[in-house]
Amino acid sequence: MCVLSKDDIRKLIVEKELIRGYVDLEVQLQPNGFDCTLQKVFRIKGDCKVDFDNSERKLAEVEEIVFENWVFLQKGVYRVRLNEVLKIPNDLIAIAKPRSTLARSGVSLITAVWDAGYEGRSEIGLVVHNESGIWLKRNARIVQLIFIKLCRGTESYKGIYLGENI
Image 1 (tube, rainbow, N blue to C red):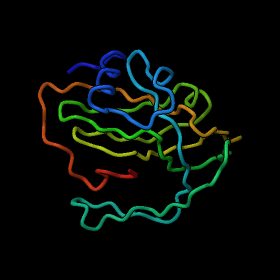
Image 2 (image 1 turned 90 degrees about the vertical axis):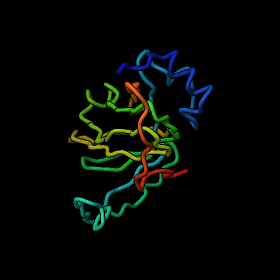
Image 3 (image 1 turned 60 degrees about the vertical axis):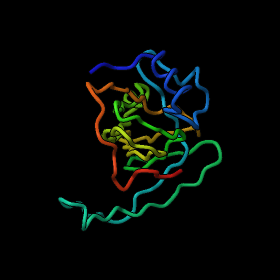
Image 4 (image 1 turned 45 degrees about the vertical axis):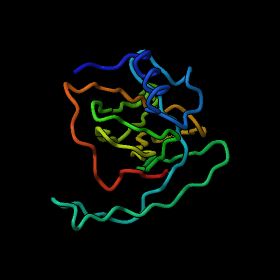
């Protein structure tokens, strides 16, 4: 396994559409990853169910928080949608970390692994721990994806989030 560099990521964006829907490629490309940006924010409402085989899975309902340019989020848990559409080949996975400004401001992200073969516009959890809340601007860079090359290709992701939000 190895982590892709800025040049590796750029090449996959150009040749394989690894990422599309970005705001500014040169700003978002980082030495060891790619910064994804904020498109929408949702308030989580209601309960959810998680089981072993997903036959009884029930996602929590959400309500979009409509905003023009800036949105203020009070302390709490939110779901946010990213602008970027990912198309991950079968020999890569991605993991995400919050940008350091969020961490230093009392905000964390809840993410999972982006599996080989996943394609979609992802949604992640955002937790505001800061008692004073946070202001976020549309298209703010909030999360850095790190792409990891697998030792060999694997089967494609086939879960319910394949093709989400595109």
